[in-house]
Length: 371
Ligand code: F0G
Image (cartoon, rainbow, N blue to C red; front, side, top):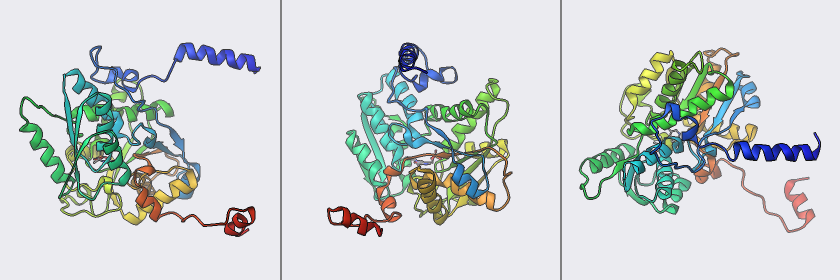
């Protein structure tokens, strides 16, 4: 094509597309939005679905795809549900939102709350939030309270605060127990189907409070009911070993894992997640910290995808099932990578080679590189 033709085409696209559509607008037929819902957006959604060829080949699943949710505005999938929860809160005249969080929900609530001009309160388990997430909440001006307890304690406290709120200072809860969060997160499933031209055979996803696996299943079944796709995937959820109440059937009192984002003892959406598992013929398994970190390193080094550790639970889980011969090698598999690696610089540092020092000369750098 000649340069002038290329420019003419770009001009044409400028007029027809203008900018990317808003997520809530694109999928409005499937969402509880109306003309009176404020057009809140930070550019969420439309995240890339990537064919992980190298990792897929190594695992023995050549049709392995990953959906990289780290490209959302605050670096995690939470933005899909938060944009809807906060837009609806604005629509209803709310002035303050509150959440409990291991960090990503907090970062997202802080950003969307700031954009909506609201007061944002986040309650975190002290000492368990990755540095990047905490800074995101602080930077957006949220009021951050760190409690001496775990995520389950934080969630119980915010639920009680909301229930007991003074009517002069009402609070809107934006955890995934707010059904609008799950409604918004369904859009991840819609995008997977749109990008693949159909549903995958398997959808693998990390499980913490169990909201996202439930939302994806709701999205796939809604798309199937509407005739947008013919099938729905088998749902594969992965919890972190030591914090896997859906696997062991036991509430975990003191879960310990590298994947702090999914360090949850008593998942709020456990029954929805079990339904997603059972209706899809899927399973929820546990993966160890070591498996999570292996997948975390491999995603960065072989695919160029820097994710936060909890995200890698989906790939770790697929590797485990493939090694056990429990997955058809020809199947199309989508692993959801839920958050960005920059969220957790401390884990990244512990797993990376340190920079080598050199004098500020060509020879010095040659020497440092061992050439
Ligand atoms: N991956 C990441 C990166 C997360 O931050 C979370 C949850 C999950 C997976 C699990 O999703 O809870 O819907 O099953 N983080 C929550 C938070 C708990 O507070 O940010 P889920």
